Length: 79
Image 1: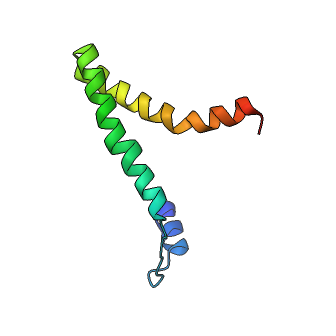
Image 2: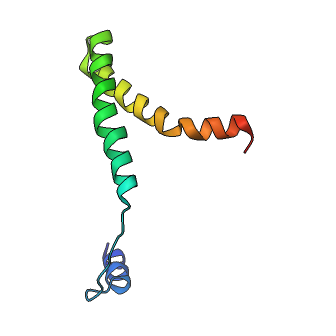
C-alpha cells in the first residue's frame, strides 16, 4: 500500500490545474439518452414486468442498446 501511495504522489502535481472541455451536444445527448429515455424505458418495463429489479435491468439494457445502435447500422452498411 505504501508503494501505491508514493507512486500516486510522485505522478500527481498538487499545483497542476486541469480544465476539461465538454461539448454541449455531448451533454445534451447524455441527458436525453440516460435520464429521459432511461426513465421512459424503466416505466415501460415496470408496467410490463411489475418488478422494480427487472425494470432497472431493462432500463439499463435499453439505454445501452440504443447507444450502440448507430454502430450496428454502420457495420451493416459496411462503412
